[in-house]
Image (cartoon, rainbow, N blue to C red; front, side):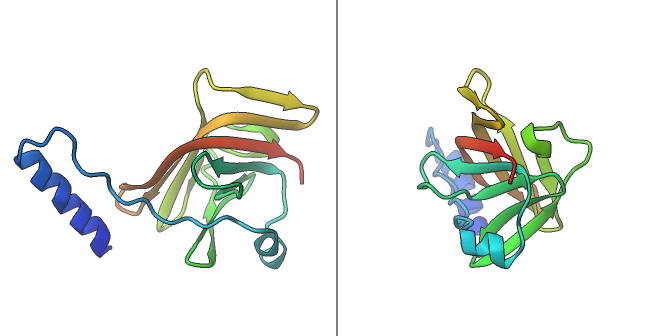
Length: 148
């Protein structure tokens, strides 16, 4: 929380000093959701797995029919689905909202899309906001949607 407050102060100071580009706000350190997390927390289900383009090969967000899942500080966090949000393949949704975070997974307009049987891969944009509506993770990558 202190880091976010300091980052906000830095942005305000940069805007007052005439700097053209404010410093980048630090990104929340989401962890890849591993097989051990899936089995240990019973995260089975069809849906879409998001892998950030600059974050390795592990999925940092799982979008499922009933919940979205992130992993932060070695804790698996489940976010309830927003039932009014648009659908994605395999019963996933675009928006999920919990008491501490809100998540959005959308297609990149004009981005790649590959369908291979029941598996669909597309260019995606993932945004995670905190309880104050501040984006704490915002990146593009690939979503792979498949039955589990």
